[in-house]
Image (cartoon, rainbow, N blue to C red):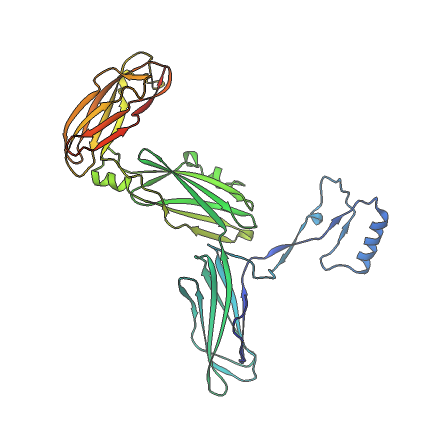
Length: 426
């Protein structure tokens, strides 16, 4: 951080960021003892001028399989950071501030005001009551602020005091730093009927190892979320042991299924529209730890999707009559007719007179063998009617079938449906 203003004052202000220490390296160099000339020179140098970090040479063979603890590259000594370092979104910025009276006189009514200025807001951090500082007396305070925005942050410090001459004076200092994004989150949305499959990719954009402790999706109304990443709710496979470790550049992918809490056949037209036209899916809440257990928490903004919209005529439900399928493998028999029950619903804002027609040419491997035209009559707003369709499978394997056209004779609205179902023909 750099001071932006300099002025002569009896008070001095020093600011130090409080951050976790690191482990010092031992600087031990394994050396093959066969190089006697170099080994003797290093021993003499070590005896004559020992280093502050201890022994710089060891007699270990390069081929030794097991190394003692003193040969480990990290020692037990903790080292305080020498630079400000990097601040990341989701971390907590903590600083120690020391205001010291460097003059030979008493400074009275010393009041300290500290704010954090970002691109969008100014957050007050400290506003203490006035105190008196004797000559050489320091005043130590701590401030903390959770980083919730990317970009430039300015720590503004304003100190007002009454000088020995009885003059009211103000000391202002500003310290600037940048907040970077530790995790890059990418999403992909896929639609499966009324459900939404949300793919989430989390990428470690830092130069250090992170440990993910939690990744939770908080759905927005009207959705309920199902976590497909932990089978049977066993989160130990995701976060236990080394599963949560992310090296620099690593990426992890997660999958969530969003469902409407009310089934389509039970939902009203308004509830169905709320599901189909909803654009906000929810937020991700991510908790991770860095070196020495430092905690970071990131909550994304609202994840959005492009609304799929809805048709004025919907097929709420389509299923094969259970009496005509093999319940052991849910298959139908080749060249044996079967019945499909389809529930057609009017989700428009007006009464519709619907005519449903089965397209016999689109799926020739599963042909309709019953009536292809069904007059559903008048359907009021939100009303549904069930029809029974008969089909004959002519080829084995997984087959799509049931292409249909729905026409409202009142408004002329037409909807084409590519297929009703897929079935395995045995």
